[in-house]
Image 1 (cartoon, rainbow, N blue to C red):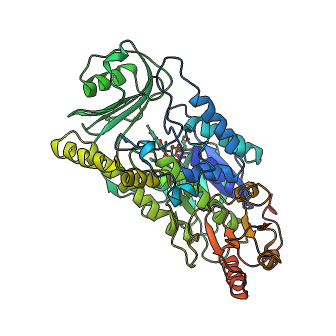
Image 2: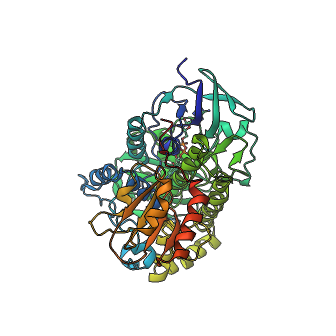
Image 3: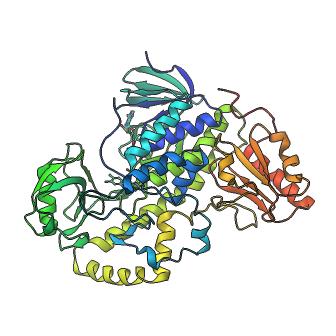
Length: 511
Ligand SMILES: Cc1cc2nc3c(=O)[nH]c(=O)nc-3n(C[C@H](O)[C@H](O)[C@H](O)COP(=O)(O)OP(=O)(O)OC[C@H]3O[C@@H](n4cnc5c(N)ncnc54)[C@H](O)[C@@H]3O)c2cc1C
C-alpha cells in the first residue's frame, strides 16, 4: 500500500489548487498527502496567465523568480513573425482586449502591486510544474495513480476509499476539479446556470494562415481568435455544450469549428500538443465545507474560462484555506477560524461566476448581443473603462470584509518596501504571519513576541503605516498609523482572533 494510513489532511487532486493547498497546509504545521488519479500530469492547454494575487502568492513563497523565468521564455520573440504577447498584461473582457495605453497605471490599486508585474504570462502547465517542485521540496508525498472512490465522515476523521485501498485521514479536501467526486460523495449541491456554448483552445499549424484575421473576430455563430502566441487558436460556438467532454479533441474537430466560426475553409495541418474543449456551465458549491470534508478550486466553482479567472480563484481558495485548516490540524487555530474560509471565499466565487456570465451575454451571435458588444467596447476604450476592467481582471481590488478602520485591512498587502531594500513579501517564504513594526521602540513586535512561533516580526525605520499584520495568505489583518497603547491593544486582539492563543511553539512543530 502506497498511501498514508494516518495523516492530518488528505488533498484529492494534484492540479494547481491541490498543489498550492498541500504546500500551505504543510507550512502551517499539518501532515499532508496528495492523492491524484492521473499517473502523469495533465498536458492539456488551459490557463495562459496568472493574476496579481496568484503572482503575489508565488512571490510570498519565493517562487517568483521561477515564474519570471517561465514568462521570459514565453515572451522571447517568436520565429514566425507573429506578435509575442504584450508584456504589460491587461487581459480581455468578452474578447475585447484591453489596450494597456488606455489604462491609468497610476491608479492607487494598480500602483500598489507593481512588484509582480514581471510574472503574469505563466501558462498552467509550467505553473503546475513549478508548484510540483515546491511540494517535493517541502517533503509532501504526491501519490499518483490513486483515485478517490468513497468517503465516510465519522465525525472525528474521514475514512476514504481509494483505488489503492482505504485511508484514514483527519480532514479531506476535494481539489479534484469541476466534476469533483469528493463534492458528489459529500452530498454538496452544485447549483448554477446551464451551458450554452462549446469552446476550443489549441495550438495548431495552419496551411493558409492569411485566411484568418488576428485578434478576436465575431460572427453570427460565435467568435474566434488567432494568436497572439504563434499558432494559438480559440473558437467559441453558441450551439450548446459539447456532447462528450471526455473524448480527446481531434484535429478535424478544431478545423471544423474554426471553419464554422471564421466562415473560411482554412486547413489545419497539425495540432501541437493536447487541445482543450470547454463550455460555460456556471455553478458554485452550496457550501465549501461539510463536516470534515472541504472543497477548493474547480471542485467548488466552475464557469467559462473567459477573462482567465478559474485557476486564480482556486489558488486564492487554497491560500485562504491552507493556513486555516493547517492551524486546526496542528492544534493552534482559534475557535471558528475554519468557518471563515467559506465566508471569505464564496462571495468572490459568486462574483467570478457573474463576471464570466456577463461575458457570455456579450459574446452571443445574436443582434442584441452584437449591439451590447458595441456599447461595452466603447466603454472599455475609455481610460476609466479600461482601468476599471483591468483592476477587476487583475484581482487588485479583491478584498475581504474585515473589521478595522485602516484602509489596508482586508486587502492583499501592497508592495511595502523596507529601508534595507527588501520588500515585506521577501520575509514570508516560510509561511506564517508577518508583522511589520516601524515604531521606534519596536512596541508592536514586543507585544507579538509570545506568538513567536507563528508570527515573524520585521522591523523597519520608515514612517507609515507604523504597523501591519499580514496573514499567511497575504491579507492584511491589522494595520495602524499610530504607536499609542490603543494600537498595541488592538494588535493583540487581532493576533488572538487569527493566530490563536499566544505560544512560542513553532508553526512547523508537527513536521
Ligand atoms: C481552455 C481553458 C482555458 C483556461 N484559461 C484560464 C485562464 O486563463 N486563467 C485562469 O485562471 N483559469 C483558466 N482556466 C481554468 C483553469 O484551468 C482551472 O480553473 C484550473 O485547472 C482549476 O484547477 P484545480 O486544481 O481546481 O482543478 P484541475 O486542474 O481540474 O485538477 C483537478 C485534479 O484532480 C484530479 N482528480 C479528479 N478526480 C479525482 C479523484 N477522484 N481522485 C484523485 N484525483 C482526482 C484530476 O486528475 C486533476 O489532476 C482555463 C480552463 C480551460 C479549460
